[in-house]
Image (cartoon, rainbow, N blue to C red; front, side, top):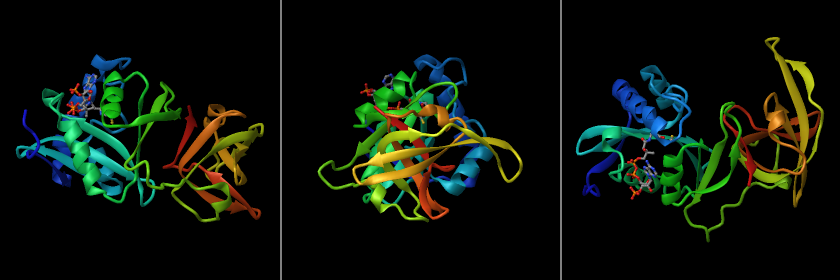
Length: 264
Ligand SMILES: CC(C)(COP(=O)(O)OP(=O)(O)OC[C@H]1O[C@@H](n2cnc3c(N)ncnc32)[C@H](O)[C@@H]1OP(=O)(O)O)[C@@H](O)C(=O)NCCC(=O)NCCS
């Protein structure tokens, strides 16, 4: 299929939500052909819900993929800073898979964000299709995202121009109030988890780890399951985390939108 001039990305609108949810549902249901543990199991949160598509439009850049004026898919982008975006989700109508539409949509996306140097994304370990898709686009797996209880996620990165500088934050740069913090280092200490209560009274576990890079070390606050994901000696990345100050000491947290990646 000659698609070069036919694929467009347009901002998704509320009225597109039912058809986007329908395409998304059909697309993810084909995951059982590429390694999913069962039908629909691979679908990410809200994948089949029109209401969820509307919610996503509220906090992500959500584009529809239009081919020859027909709506054939969607693509969602999250932000981890001015020069770092996260490809949160892409789906193409399964009756048009393997025609180069997904690839073309991504190429158009890179051009829509010319200042973005770093793109990252996660995909389940079992998904042979997405690994093939992202690797052909130039992504490299840099680590594991253990945030899903049922499977490991491969964490991929693509750098537009590897010769340009795209410095990660360093420990010595961290200041209270910093957001969109992406930083790598080694875990050199981890405290025993201790029970605490949230403001609403829920029981939680918290552990303080120490993250070290060549400029120093900082407290990394781990909550609940995160505590079990990493151990002393692991090289990790906190992506899109934040720094604040507790009793005068800077500490780093992964937060609701951040990711804790165990580097390979
Ligand atoms: C992933 C997805 C968006 C790819 O869209 P697409 O338009 O079919 O992709 P393309 O035709 O551009 O494929 C490009 C390359 O990806 C790889 N690829 C695509 N499908 C593949 C498959 N089933 N198995 C292995 N590799 C595959 C191939 O290298 C392919 O190049 P080739 O056809 O020249 O061999 C589509 O399969 C999809 O909607 N999947 C369900 C939803 C999903 O998993 N989304 C990603 C996670 S958020």
